[in-house]
Structure formats: C-alpha cells, structure tokens
Amino acid sequence: MNEKWGPRRQDLIRFLREIQKAGLPVESLDDSDELVASGLIDSLAILQIVIYLEDTYGIDLSVRGVDPEQLGSIGNILDLIEQERP
Image 1 (tube, rainbow, N blue to C red):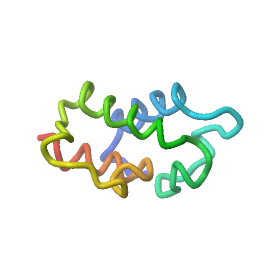
Image 2: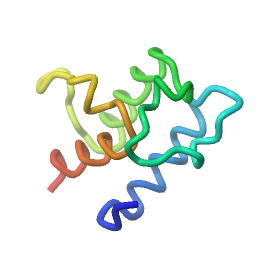
Image 3: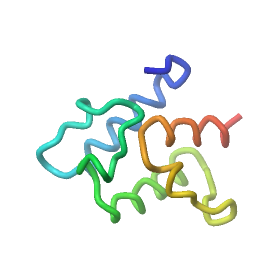
Image 4: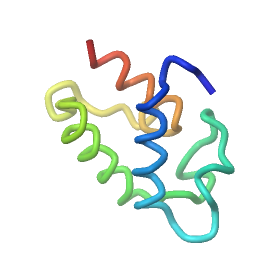
C-alpha cells in the first residue's frame, strides 16, 4: 500500500464495498489488481466510480475525459485523485 494515499484509500475501499459484486471482498485485492477483471465490479460500477470522484473530489471527468485505464484498479484511481487534487 502506498502511504501517501492514507485516508483517501480507506474512503475508496469503503465506497467499493458498497458497489462491489458479492463473493469477492475488496480487501483481497492488491492496489494494482484490475477491478473488472477480478470480478469485483462490473461496467455499471465504473459509472458509479465516476460519480464518486466527481461528488467526493470535484474531479470533472466530463471535461478532462475518462481513460478506462485510470479507473481500472484501486492504485490507478488513487493516482488520478492525487493528480487532480491540490
């Protein structure tokens, strides 16, 4: 785990628990594991992640665009937050 993410990582994990599919706990994934490929979430959940990022961190993905790779893993999402937040 990357320590710079601290509370943001915990908040993201908490959110992913709310939207994940049953059967695979989010805690079993490494930060680099692919969320969709692991079976944790489906493509609809990606939209929920976009809304989470917009509502929680004010990241306007409609302006900057969405690279699916940036939303593919816990680490990539946290890196995106770090890039977009001061």
